[in-house]
Image 1 (cartoon, rainbow, N blue to C red):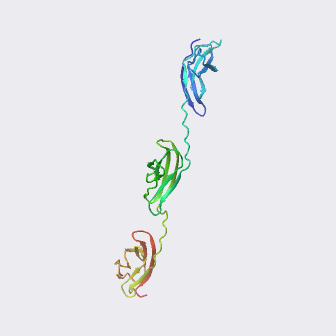
Image 2: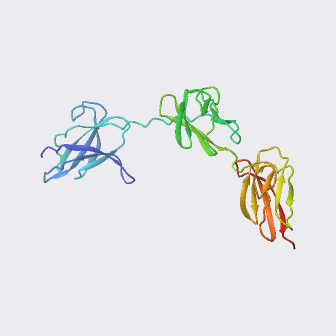
Image 3: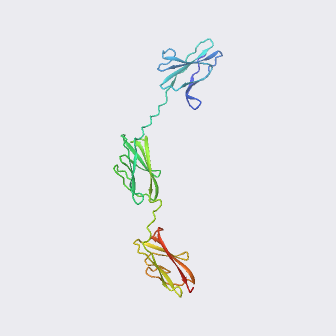
Length: 305
């Protein structure tokens, strides 16, 4: 009988149908081939006369054998057997080394508490995070999905990294997500994360108190000639008025007294706008904003009714 051909390799198979390591070899070409014997050793030297080998499997005329996934290093050789039970010389030796075990998952953080400092609705704010985990932990602090800074000390804080308290800052009206991703110090081994969403500025501005008082007065004589309207409020805030005539914006008046048709800050500059009814309206805002605080109007009949 000819010597069995050499094993050509060890293949690792990972699938739902096959798993483990597979020995493959070239077929023996003897006409009276009956099959193959697979031998295994846990020590070397490993061969027919070593005393370390054990018979693992008797096979037919196949050219592969799945050895599974041994947990320790093993050594393999094969022989061919004919119909008279004569056995060939052994093949070359193949070594199987188990793949390195995946490192165990780290223990997650015990706790991760978050606290907001300052007042996000009205001004500056920040976020502090604390964990009572006894390990040496660092935190990647992120703002709105982007890395902001790495904090190595308790307390972990945003936007400052000072290890003691929050350094407050202002980041623009709207929602902000502040996230703390915790790692074992000096590694990329994540052990937990925590986040909080902060609304900076009021999402729905609170209604402003209305004007204290509003007075309207007609100047001139709408029935016979020129006329105008003056408006006054004793509200202590800085107020401006959008003055409107018959539903259309006419002008903006920034000073007491608010007046129509002129903006002179003191009194009405009178004018003539055509016979019939005219509605003059004053819409009041906080100066330089669109925050309305009140409105008042008069309907004036110009010319004799």
